[in-house]
Length: 423
Picture (tube, rainbow, N blue to C red):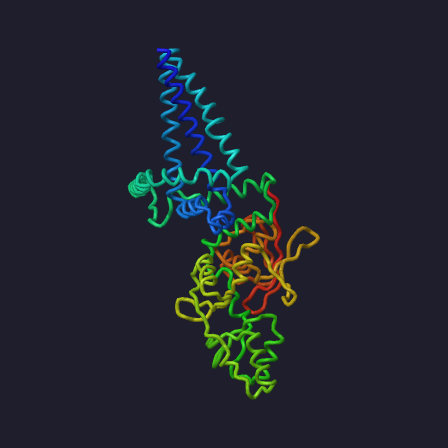
């Protein structure tokens, strides 16, 4: 009996070690820097290449680790319960539960994850070959689990799209960032940047584009002297060219190319043909996700695209800088006109231009106004009020008071926003 108990204790200890391996591997691989792994891979590290491939398929990775971890934890608990029952009788169940909870929590979860989070790259490189083998072995099982989960949801719950990852950690990452921010571990600017990266999939081009009413476009039929003058006065490097009507964009003129052509012509405007040096316009649908558009910019090595609706009508333009600003915040250089459009008032309220995006206001003031109902603050007020309000009218919703200060024709140009005290 003593030998049998010793053998059981040895197997339980081995299973706890395996559980610690699974827990530490999950933390190390998810916390490892992709940039660092990419750099090591470029230097010829085979283990870094394995880590990159594992992170490229997070569903299989997380699924295999969770499955393996649960298997060893349940088996260890079952063996320990059996051993305690043989020694203490029926009360052994209580002793086994308390003992295994403490052992798994301390040695199988906290200790390995603490080490992995403090040494993520080193731990990730160490465990990558073994985890790669486990993912290959358990991959079919995890795929089957996902299919079963979707089937059960189809029978008893909400429908789950085939494109939605059942085991995705996307929202878990967002929650972890918010939690660390609340605890002081992540400053607001870092939280906004990390959240901006996660939001690229949810946001669409129309959410960040420069609307056509604010586009600076040039009539291609203007004289070369007028076109050069407009380009020099503009704060933008790339400018759309239109013919006939402003919505008919026929090219995109780059200031550098224009000035080079003028230089090659010896300053003779009569030899300058702006249309000949303009690039063809690139049109993208307004429903394109920011992540896809960012990848398209990088793939085509372009910085500028025109946005069209489902009817092919130009709605605005989007640049690479517009997308990057969703991650890092406002980017300004020496030629930009800094128009934040948000100003704090002495009474604690905020004055905002109607054209300010609700997302920018939330980031600047750390508020939580709804962003899916309208792009701008003015649009949000109109959506909630179900009318175009007059100056002086005020509305209260979402815990805020919105007072219309100025209106130009059908556009709300300025609002005073006051956050109401909660009881």
